[in-house]
Amino acid sequence: MTDARKIIIDTDPGQDDAVAILLALASPVELDVLGITAVAGNVPLALTERNARIICELAGRPDIKVFAGCAAPLKRRLVTAEHVHGKTGLDGPQLPDPTMPLQPGHAVDFIIETLRQEPPGTVTLCPLGPLTNIAQAFQTAPDIIDRVQQIVLMGGAYFEVGNITPAAEFNIYVDPEAADIVFRSGVPLVVLPLDVTHKALTTRDRIAAFRAMGTEPGRMVAEWTDFFERFDMQKYGSQGAPLHDPCVIAWLIRSDLFAGRHINVMIETQGEFTTGMTVADWWGVSGRPANALFIGSVDADGFYALLTDRIRRL
View 1 (spheres, rainbow, N blue to C red):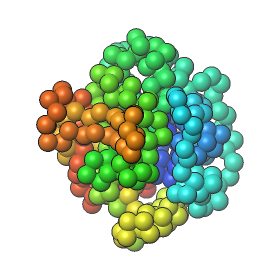
View 2 (cartoon, one colour; view 1 turned 180 degrees about the vertical axis):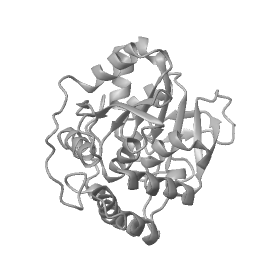
View 3 (cartoon, helix red, strand yellow; view 1 turned 180 degrees about the horizontal axis):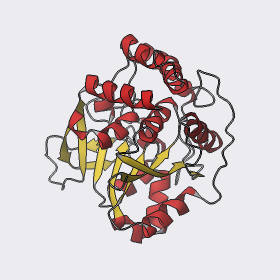
View 4 (cartoon, rainbow, N blue to C red; view 1 turned 45 degrees about the vertical axis):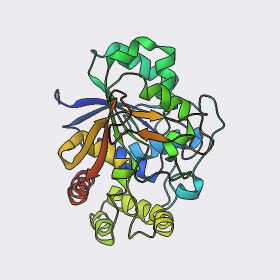
């Protein structure tokens, strides 16, 4: 267990967040989940912290510490995505209320205290939603910034452009000021944008493989993907839906499944039509120094093989 990479998952579950958390908890050899911090995003905070606890119990891990974080973006009103994820954020299958407790204290304080306690360069932050909690932690305690090993996040888009506005991906759009703080922080970033997640689509066979496990986690993953893929299939005319957030965890476990470029990525906070856009200098024309490994492609079969293998272990 000593070689497992220490991570904090910062999340706004969301069905695809749920699959990401299950993948992480099913991979204890590679990943040591120090805690899960909830943020408002796909649905309001009261639901995201509840959903995070439901997912931990589904994975048989009620010992995981779950903290509630920021209920609204740094400077804006919250925009949510019930139109994709349903009113609970985990619509689809019926799930029991969680019995494990929410931890006392604020998620931002947990992030700060953990980074101060653990040896420098040993904790990776894994944001799966808006970057509010991370940015707030960096603003409150600048001393932690250079203690972070890496930030591996799902967010942004370049060639696929936007999914909430014509120019912006949802996670970045919800709190562009927070994203700007994180992208300028100097912490090594790995960005899993829509450009890669839209290459990791569900198919009938891939969903059937989860259902065929005969386990509760397998059935839940199948039902969640059944629920939210309807929205994407209608919107994009695709044969399935992207599992966005599990790409973060899959990259941590099997980075060889992915390919990208070290480039400069800036966040637009002022644009009339482009607020929340990730301005990714894919062609290296800006002269700005690279600040992110921006992932562009994935071996989708390998990704689903990993996901299926790990979910089966739960």
